[in-house]
Length: 307
Image (cartoon, rainbow, N blue to C red; front, top):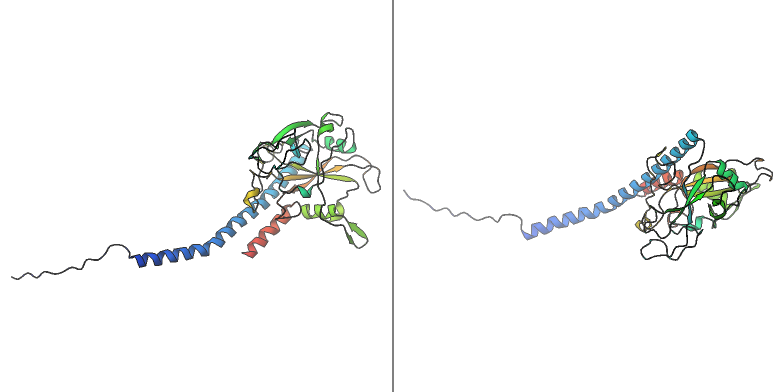
């Protein structure tokens, strides 16, 4: 019997260089197509989280006021505590801070007016102390992280004659860059427009002749936390360089403080300071004003539509 040798042609295992190159090119192309969608998804998540955080904080503060009939103490003044040099690695502090300066951790300081001190036994002092804000804390500029662990310098505000009133400085909401405008027979001021943009409602409900409108930070030490809120959330900016390490990213409560009992149209009695709403202080590249729930919700839909 004859045996025939059959030659087997050896087949190379795996892929050829050309096949591998083609596969890699396809994968790179698919990755390029996915990148915009991944970025859009991240921004959309941040937008919706910011909007939800503001809504949750508004609800938590509303419940706190309803249950305790007062505003939470230990909120941040958003002004600097003792004099502090701008140490290397301290984030957004470019220069030394003097006690009472606008806290350098804020993402956009132009949306505020210069810090003010309310004299002991003034209408503002009585309005704040009767509202339950018996203590407030300033912010330490020398702390590396500009959001967490910055509370310092406890100021006692429990009575209008307390020593804290002489040194505590509050941060008023400002109207820089927002011109007054005429609506019918009425003049709408820049401050009214700013508050309406941040909080909603008609601009005319905000009366600068009768009230001061101050910003107070909702940091980790305020009594709201562990009462009607589990923790103090932070704002997620579009630009990472404005994150919690570099900037004060906690949200802010706008408080209406009585200041005039004699002008026509103002209350004849001293009213308790009133919580108006929660806002975020964002980089100027995102907004020229403080932003509230409505603005953040609109921003979410705008970004979704753009992608």
